[in-house]
Image 1 (tube, protein in one colour):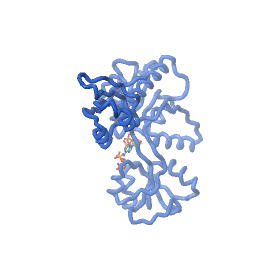
Image 2 (cartoon, helix red, strand yellow):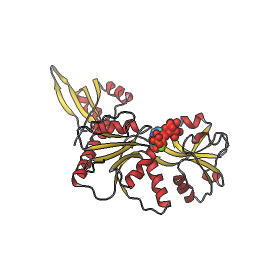
Image 3 (cartoon, protein in one colour):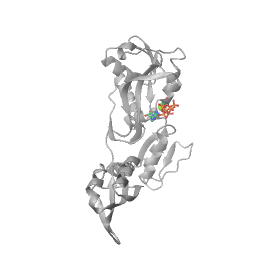
Image 4 (cartoon, helix red, strand yellow):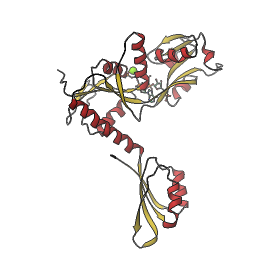
Length: 299
Ligand SMILES: Nc1ncnc2c1ncn2[C@@H]1O[C@H](COP(=O)(O)OP(=O)(O)OP(=O)(O)O)[C@@H](O)[C@H]1O
Ligand SMILES: O=P(O)(O)OC[C@H]1O[C@H](OP(=O)(O)OP(=O)(O)O)[C@H](O)[C@@H]1O
Ligand SMILES: [Mg+2]
């Protein structure tokens, strides 16, 4: 029986978002024992239950208020929103924040040797997709008529199989398109994973827990994007060195025992340090350059 006082979070059971969703929650300090087959897992140290489902079901579970929050790709969320609106519903939810994983784009692609002179080339064509509403929204705005062929997977094989003239599917590296003899011609939607909350009244204790989690998520994401940088540098080149570190805060400068001409510099940078920048730092006289990951951050 569901304990309504516990925060219920939905995440993808297995797929492109599951590992990083799980990692994010673990980094926020939630101890979960996710055995492969368990659909429902209970956190040991916080009043939180994790529901592991197909990603397609997550927007609906949040919109129907079955779970309190969900981690989902914006592409799937937007598609479900348009789907429900098309059925006359008025779905409600809040986006709590965008996350730093699950980046991909929904694109139109055509066979490699097919000429393409803009979206109008698709007039009257058949397009295979798992995202009929996002596709329709995009082509309707351009007043392009098309026939859709709904496929829930393996969309990329549709043109070769004679099912469609073009496809509209997710792309990240483009390797799947290339392997299937297709080329990306238009990006229609850019997506990342996001965290959403159900609409409606939330008990104060649960809302406080969500707010705490959000602060921790901010800390985890900020830490992932930041680096702790240390180096030894000549005292007379400090300004030049700082100018090479655009994402860095003002450094802490410490004396080096027995060396009056050089100092130790410590700083947090919101960007990683590329090899090229490290080489330039070395040219300016810096040495012992260390770039360290940061585990947690709170401002
Ligand atoms: N190549 C990719 N790179 C990065 N993120 C991706 C990529 N493909 C998909 N995604 C994101 O991950 C989400 C889940 O993708 P996945 O392929 O695991 O979905 P699925 O096969 O529909 O899974 P499920 O079995 O849960 O329905 C996508 O909706 C998208 O937001
Ligand atoms: O541009 P790429 O890096 O090649 O990625 C794109 C592919 O990734 C996703 O599928 P996934 O591999 O998750 O398999 P699925 O079809 O089983 O969901 C997506 O549906 C594409 O097919
Ligand atoms: Mg799915």
